View 1 (tube, rainbow, N blue to C red):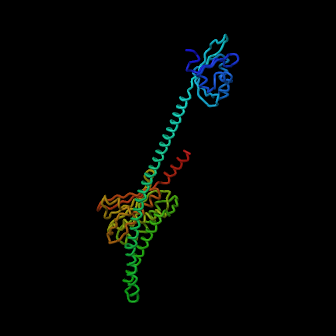
View 2: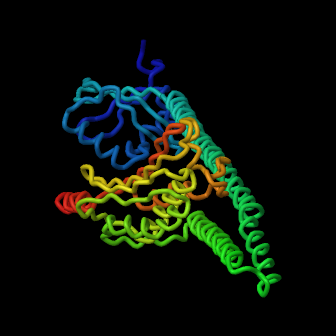
Length: 402
């Protein structure tokens, strides 16, 4: 087949001058020249889209290196950009050294590749967008799950607060009314019969008024402590407290109450035991535990308040020989939302607020309260606090690590 009729665009270029000496009809069509003569009269660099690409082509051409399947962007003589696949080989033409350059128009393939690449990029973009959307949906789902969990926790907490509120209203409506009814009744009798009443009756009524006032005061004090705990308004002032002194002070304070009921109340402490704690809170806890023991211990019974250090902890035990409690009821005694109030051995009326208050106070102090009991065998309430030695060792360890 003659070069003129070859379907591949062919040009023969002089190695020394770089001028086209021959071009076939296929190349005229590829480069959109009006004729072979027009193409041969044009400069080669006019048909290159990039000056840098033409310089590189020239270096290859004049250094004698061949182009093998080189894809490059070219320009037609009309200025339209096209893509051409080029190969070169040495030939002799008209008795001088020349180089034959094969041209194949690959514009359609490059356009298809560009379209495919654009489609792939669009697809990748869509995939990335879908993945991002999935991640956002997962985050939203996790947020909804967390909100649902928070809502559930808040519902439980709201239920607890409502139960506590109902308990407070019950105490105010019923338990607080009883001592005030007694106060009103006895003071009315005293007021009406002050001039004619026998001295012995007057002393009995006065004692009853004092007892009712003490009961009301104790109830109001516990209500105040408990409400402040619920509002998180209790300030804790930690000092190095001698627990033995606290035990004896509260035993001495409540010994007359126990003696009046015929109950022996003793404090059993040995070596001094120090604990970093809040003295007022410890007094409140001990008063409630001892008062509770007096309430449920019959005449002739005994209450021992003991203190000892066991390892890193301080143990204060309030053990009585009273009525005792069933095992399945022990846990409920420290829950305010459980109705556990019962009448004492001498008909004393309680509120059920003392032990829950003690449990919450001891948690504030970093300690623990445990109850042990058997029906008819009494109860032992154990107050557990970290000792000052344990706290010092922990602080020393933290300083060493720091």
